[in-house]
Image (cartoon, rainbow, N blue to C red; front, side, top):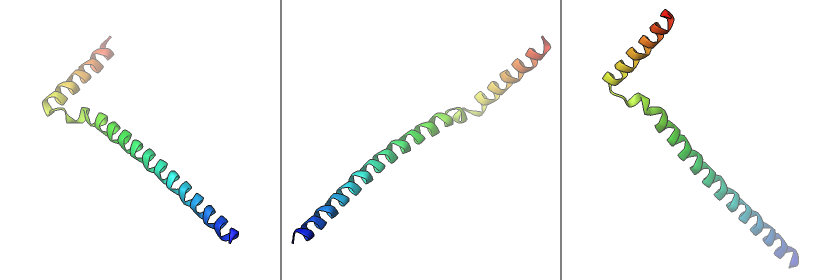
Length: 71
């Protein structure tokens, strides 16, 4: 009888450890998912400019580049 009780105790311990590890993995996954979403939003900020703003930005970039070579 004691052997069966010790086996059941061991199984309960293993299941508790699995639940704890699974919860930790789920929490870390949720945090990493949030970080990835934030990075994606930050990267898309420059791509959401209007075409006019983007054209002006590229023109200024070109002028800086060509004026820098003239010096």
